[in-house]
Amino acid sequence: MAGPLIPVEEAQARLLAAARPIETRETLPIWAADQRVLAEPVISRLTQPPFDASAMDGYAFRRGDVAEIGDRLDVIGESAAGHSFSGEVGAGQTVRIFTGAPVPKGADTVLLQEDAIRRDDGQIELTFLPDLGRHIRPRGQDFAEGEAVLAEGLLLDPGRLMLAAASNHADVSVYERPLVGVIATGDELRKPGSTLGPDQIVASSVFAIAALGAPGWR
Image (cartoon, rainbow, N blue to C red):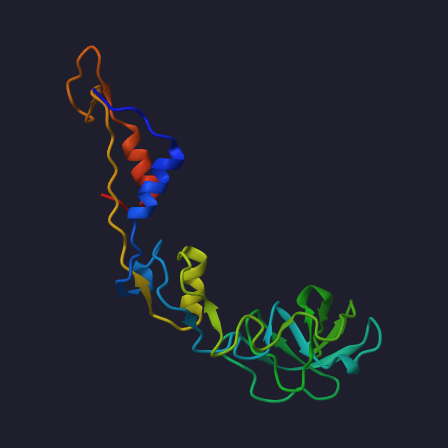
């Protein structure tokens, strides 16, 4: 016969009193570190973005060169992601720019491509006046080199793994995965696949509890 039941609070207190923190660490590639706990902070190895970058497809220009809708600018080149414009934007000039591309030297604003009419004479005509600095992501907006982007003790989920990768880390230091045991008790319980007696049931909840408490269990 089973003994008397104890209160839940007492059971929890007994378990926690016997628990010991995990101190063993291991280094894993970030693709294998999902649902692991960081053993040390992740310090960024670069600044992101590394340059002033366009947030939209459009045209980079000097905001002081336009005063009203209908003003025109000469298109002098193109800046794309991975292929920046090497020159400088001067008075009355603009550079065709794409999302993620470096903003050319001299430019301080990006006009959406939908807000420009591309003319056959190599100019664009503005149909909207953007504010100074519009659609530009400044260098270091996300994080700077040397900044702690993830703290020790955080559980690595998809978003945090992406951040670790973005800060130029191929692997991370994590705590060893805990060994978890789940025990289902009861004279009536049998394993799935067993032949059941008239007063017996399948011990099914143990599998849900194991999956909730230890993702990737086996």
